[in-house]
Length: 250
Ligand code: AMP
Image 1 (cartoon, rainbow, N blue to C red):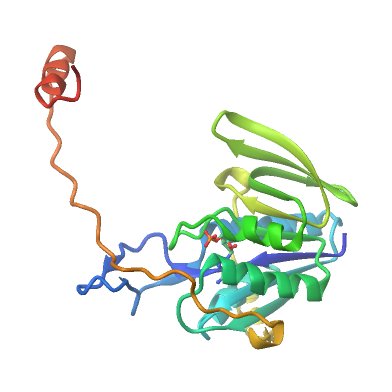
Image 2 (cartoon, rainbow, N blue to C red; image 1 turned 30 degrees about the vertical axis):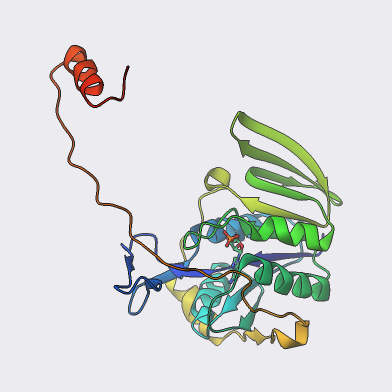
């Protein structure tokens, strides 16, 4: 295969405890550590391994969002991506808009495989890959925990509720990654330095003919209720009694 495209979303780092803005209008992100969405790092790692096995020629990373997304693209280049494409956009972007933008890029690049995360850890939507496959009219293999490619097909082991499911899809296709697919490599300092000098291509949303306006309106954000303190019980009898007292058991 020739080309793999990987989506890298800039998200608040998974170690950071996020806070809802006091007026409930959203999540406060100012000054917080931002990172590549963890599932997207897995996506890039998998793409690099496919290329390193000689089964693909080029890996292109794409990020849609504010200027600062270039930091995440540089991480992608430092990991080993061949090229980076930034699609600038300030403000909210819904999965449908991201999928339409990716469709424009994927068509333009004539990609053979698109690997995305199974979900972005900020919005937890888990929609973009599925929407892209539908818009592109190509197969999708979501929640991948193993990915084997041959020239024209991909064999994907999927993590489903009942266990594992193995499917084969024709390429081009969209694959989304689950946690167990691989463990991404560490980025080495010399590679970070080298990545700083690599060019990042900028493609406007307008040139792709996409209207990025949100279709949904979020009315209010609220933090989850604080967790109640736990109770220690001596034995199973006391546990059953406590559960009965609280009406959990009949
Ligand atoms: P979501 O549907 O929002 O949970 O996102 C699923 C996946 O789509 C992410 O793991 C990314 O691979 C990709 N994606 C979503 N938003 C973006 C973005 N703004 N830029 C690049 N890739 C994205």
